[in-house]
Image 1 (cartoon, rainbow, N blue to C red):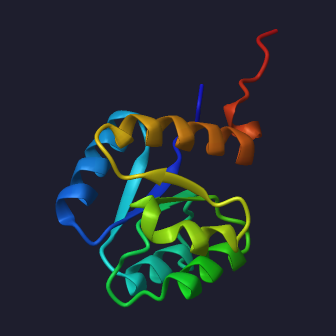
Image 2 (tube, rainbow, N blue to C red):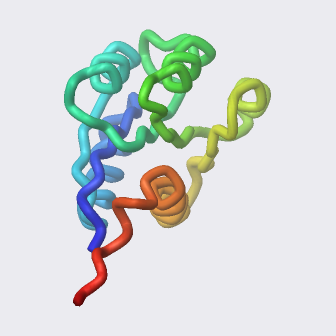
Length: 134
């Protein structure tokens, strides 16, 4: 059985934040929310463990390049997904490690769920394994 994973959802739009929170909690994830860059940094560098961040780079107080650097430089490594309008961030994301981008569009929440599960399985494979029954 999969252990509970802690996600951070950061978006300036409260409707998107709350919608994604409901969707991810329905999948069994524990979710924290952030509405600006300062809150993102507070959460990712807090003592509370975060397993994955879903971030729209168009956050108040954010310089997207600096925010991406902070996300990438975190130790331990924090997998993250850029959930944004792709046309705004094509060049930005190409300068960084394999940043996963899920474009905001019609049914992006379903794609986002699949991407999150794949990233979590790659990053935390041991947490998905169940002990063998004797």
